[in-house]
Amino acid sequence: MRKSFKKRLKITRTGKLVRRKMGQGHNRAKKSGKQIRNKRKELSLGTSFVRIFKKYT
Image 1 (cartoon, rainbow, N blue to C red):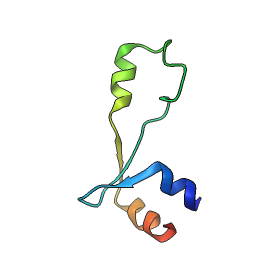
Image 2 (image 1 turned 120 degrees about the vertical axis):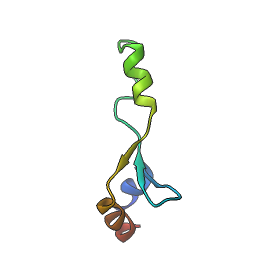
Image 3 (image 1 turned 120 degrees about the horizontal axis):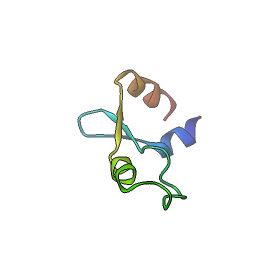
Image 4 (image 1 turned 90 degrees about the vertical axis):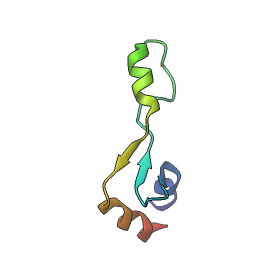
């Protein structure tokens, strides 16, 4: 959980955790343009995850 967790998450300047939305790796041709556009945005996680993230990194 330690290194894989660190690779997938990022702490912003304000201290929030941000991750990518799933389903962006491959097989995107069959998805609609609206789905692809919506998946470009990053998803922020709650503040409780920040303590867990800092504990393991």
